[in-house]
Image (cartoon, rainbow, N blue to C red; front, side):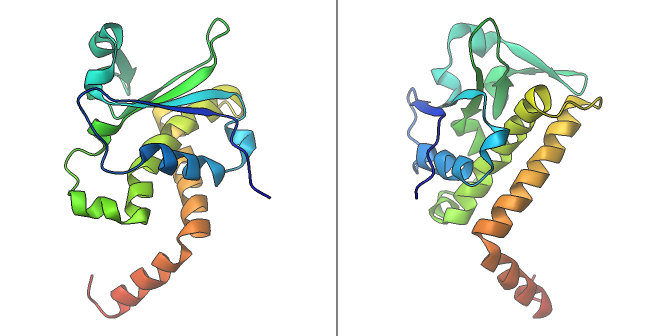
Length: 173
């Protein structure tokens, strides 16, 4: 039986082409985590910094007491507001900055790049909707990112742990 994903995953790029199917990778990531964590999430938007509207390009956000431009972030979470469902926005071009293209041919590395952002923003969603904590919101999101990543990689890429352990034993790393 195939699991069904009840979240819209939309892509909109302006003057940018992703070297792999980011939509497919995000879908695989979401299908591997329990549905209860993303139950009220409306959509995941994959775009690039130039594909944002004017308001978002000029917008800012606060994180850990500092102000950041939205167009320079790798992603953000918009909570449910006035009947509009919650959404996660991922800026794929910012996520891929500084990563060699040859590394993106490895399925585990594609997942690693997008899961880092997706699971962090999903941590914000869990924090707002399911399990509220009275700590710094970025710390809570990072905690959920670690928890979701660990669960995903142990289930999906368990063999890489064995390879890594062998490399450490052989003192290659």
